[in-house]
Image 1 (tube, rainbow, N blue to C red):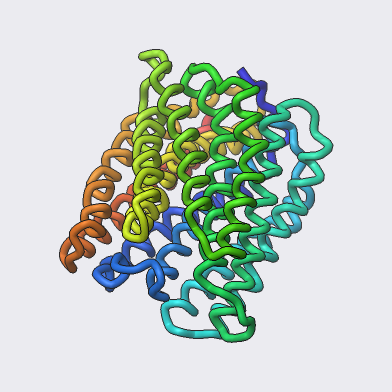
Image 2 (cartoon, rainbow, N blue to C red):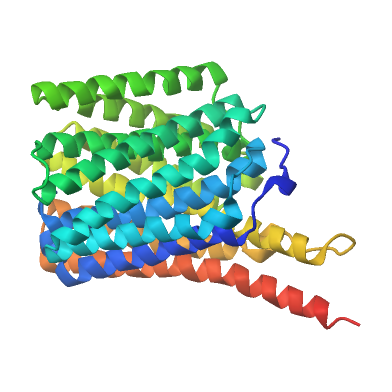
Length: 418
C-alpha cells in the first residue's frame, strides 16, 4: 500500500473549496435542463448546449480534478504545492469565475463574457501548473503517477489555450474553423486531461481502497506514452485535412482500453471491499465503454457519447473518489486540530457507507433518463432528466456537508470534555 505523507498535505480548506463547488455546478446543470432541456439535447452546436457542456467540464469535473490533485499529489506522491496558502483562493476564483463568465456568455449571447471567460480560464490552468509542476519534477518515487499527472496538466493547459482561441473565434475576433478546433479542444480536454488523470490517480486509489492489483506498470506506461502521440496525429488530421475519423478512433480506443482495465480490476476486488466506490467505478467504466462505442457511430452517436461520458460515466467515477477525499479531508482536519493522544473517528464514520450508497443510487434515474432524452427527444424526458440530475448532485452536496457536520460535532465534544 502507498504510504501517505500527511505532513505534505496543504490546508484542508484548499482542496475542500473545489470539491464542494463541483456538486453546485451539477445542480446548476440540472436546472439548465429543467428550463430548456428539449433544445439542449438536440444538437452539440447550440450555444446553450455548449454552456451545459462547460458547466460539466469546467464546473463539475474541473473543480473535482483541481481539488483532487491539490490533495492527492502531496499526500500520495510527496509533491510539494507551491504557494498554496497565497494562490489557492485565487486559483479557485479564477476557475469558477471564468466558468461563470463563459457559461453566462454562451447562454445570453454575451460576447464580452465569452471572451473574458476564454481569457481567464487558461490563466487558472497556468496557475495550477505553476503550483504543481515544479513539485512533480522534483519529487521522488511514484513515477507513473507523476508522469500521468504531468501529462494531464499539459493536456489541460493545451485544451484551455485552444478554448481561449475558440472564445476569440466565437466573438468574431479570430478567423478560425470552429468545428475542427472544437473537436481538438474537446479531445485534449476529455481524454488528455480528465481520463489520463483518473487513470493515473486510479493506479494508486483503486488498490488502496479496494484491495485489487494495479494495472501492470509496463502496460500503463505504453498507454500513457503513446496517447499524446496518437491524439496529436488525430488532431493534425482533423485540423489539416478536415477528417475526424482518426480522432474518433483514437478517442474510442484509449477510452475503451481504460474502461476495460477498470472493469478487469474491479472484478478482482475482495468481497469485503465491494462497496459504493467499487460500484461507482464499475458503472462508470461500463458507461464509458458504451460512450466510446457510440462515438464510432457518427454524428448522432457523438451527442450520445457526450451524454454518456460527460454527463454520467466520468462524474460517477469522480464522485466515488470525491466522497473518499472529502471524508479524508475531514479526518486530516481533526488530526491537525486535536493532535495526538486522542482516538479520532475513522474516515468511514465521517462518511458512512450508507450515505455513499444513497448517493450512488440517486445517480441511477439520471443514468436512464439522460440517454433516453437523447435517443427519443421530448420535452418531458429532458426535463425529467434535469430534475434527476438536480437531485443526484444535491445528494452529493449533502453527503459532503455531512462530513463537515460530523467533524464539527466531534470537535465540540472534545472542547467540552472535562
